Length: 82
Ligand SMILES: [Zn+2]
Image 1 (cartoon, rainbow, N blue to C red):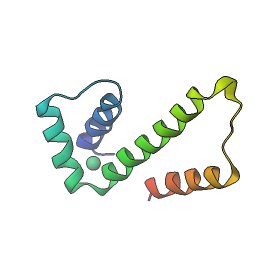
Image 2: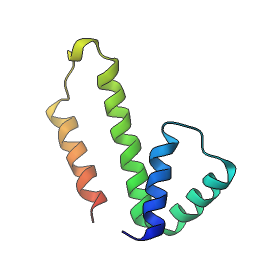
Image 3: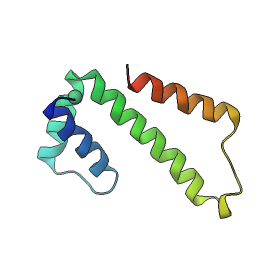
Image 4: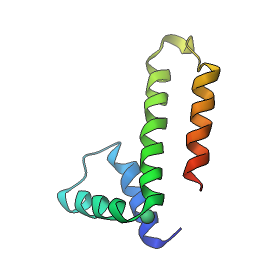
């Protein structure tokens, strides 16, 4: 992973927990426009976050991923490592 990519992946993860500054957003968006790897990474991170939130908000983990959802998750993760 290139140095810039590492920084961007950190920003992607930060952006889930706090609002990014204008400068950070600019840097992030410009990099994503150029870098397919980080686009996939950021996309996958949001996807995984959505699933985790879904699981967190269900009562006592009663709802589990269906086979199809699990399959889709694996497909997305495979794509991110291409
Ligand atoms: Zn990158």
